[in-house]
Length: 124
Image 1 (spheres, rainbow, N blue to C red):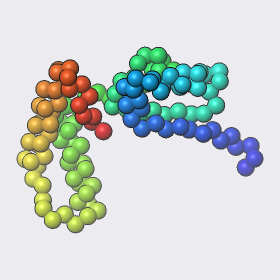
Image 2: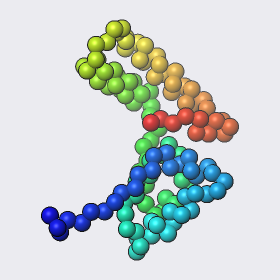
Image 3: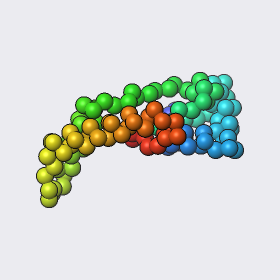
Image 4: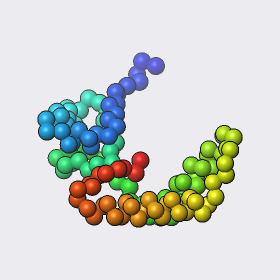
């Protein structure tokens, strides 16, 4: 219909990587995200935290770090979705999933406290 208002939406995946640039490319977003002048929707996805001047112009949603149970549930859910849609040659035992989740969690906790490994890998 003619009375439908369409608004473009800009999606930035891994917007946090731009935060690391010495050229500060995200600075152009400041004026674009002002409420009075914003003409489009904006979604930024990231495993990295942005500085406060960018985050205060948006709704900020954060997921807490997963614990071992979250990792196990995620792995089992992914495995279940794969086995229901594909012929699986080898069966993956729950002990393997539990061990992998525990090892990943231990590694994540170990590198999280060492600043040289900040953002070594994300959880997405």
